[in-house]
Image (cartoon, rainbow, N blue to C red):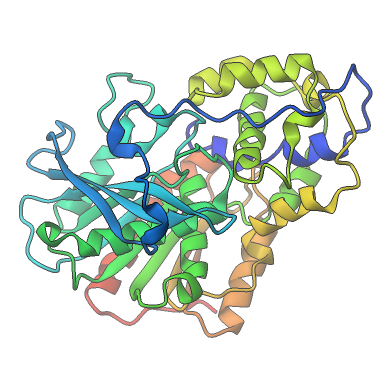
Length: 404
């Protein structure tokens, strides 16, 4: 389920905005519900944040070793990034340094799948969690990367408000996390070649970072980006959904809550919730995957919506369009490795193909792979070894192949 949930991104958003419902009294004026701030003061934004530039280092601290990554040094970096409204935010990334590190060896920014609305769902938190439901199951695969002598940056790409579903935000945080990691002298990454990797929701952040890099972080050079199972058109995802009850409905509702946090004036979803919807929202607001699934299990949009106030509002649709890579005009300057299931019922695969064709037409070297796997999750596992091998070739200076 972990790999499925980000494919539900914003699934409730447009349904709440367009559902022709009249279930109960409206909730006009209901404000977005943000997560409780992380109690650790390291995560807090400094008072002079507006004086910093994107990617500037705000604080650095060594972290305890992690048993799942033997011999690895762990460093947490707080840096200045940007939210979807262009305002400065404080974000964090965790850098894993291998025991056989040499100066300026490769840096891989790995965008982990983050499913949740609470601050404890961030990667920097789950690396140290005692909850087996939140543990980083990708540790064996990440260890194979560390054994190659690569450092790994793990950004908390949902940002300080847990903006689940805000893919463009994830791209900016990813890029600023790389900028910041390269500036921390003790990490030895100042001249390291850089690549990115991510699947599903992590693939969204990776894909957006690749597409935004030429304009948002033009000084950064990348050897490539591997992105798999990426939901590239949120509008088409939602148009394919109906009003049937679903066991994972809570994840879709969580995406709506997360996007409202990032776009409170454009997407006032809470105004369109009935009393039941607001109560479920409260149960989810600080939850991770299991809490969110439990709160929304077996529900549908008809159980939580009360209003049609956003039905004709172009701002609601614009938020989804703004977070859809297929509709974004920017083109990566780095080679791209893309993989997906041949038939993935959870994401619009035609949008992936359309986007890759556009990249090819612009001269990007794109390698696309299809896997005959039965579902989204299996594809993540099947495609990862080939993606890492492709990245290793890029780090070794081999010319990127193109399937264009």
